[in-house]
Length: 163
View 1: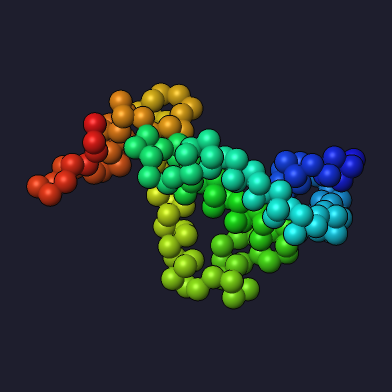
View 2 (view 1 turned 90 degrees about the vertical axis):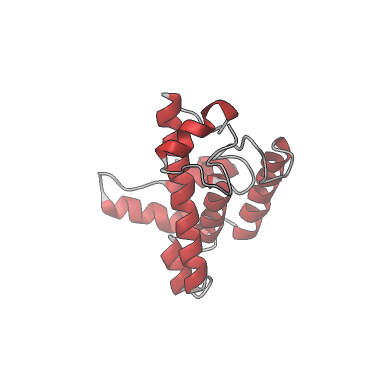
């Protein structure tokens, strides 16, 4: 049943992201194998690239927005997820460490990706705490409070936030 729906790239992505919680492990392993056989990595990457281009266009194709969306803007969490999804679809690795072990990332690149992913996740979590709701946009009104929550403070040479 899952594979019948997997012609759609969104469903393929959801299946790549799934996690085993409970049930029959042999059935989950069979789904893993069937999914690996059913996804065309080149077509998957092409479809995800189109999605990314459309998403970036919504944010004026710039990672330098003054009010970025921590998830969807260019350079946001979604871009890191896209790399991981394409790697999984191609059978290249299921984690950043897996990509390193496969020789696709240097040790320095692995460290940088992990650092940037943690920073984006921390920014997003702080934003949601300050906004007291689900929020991904780092709008001017909350930038100062988010900066303070993350431990940034003004310095003589620069402000912690533009707000």
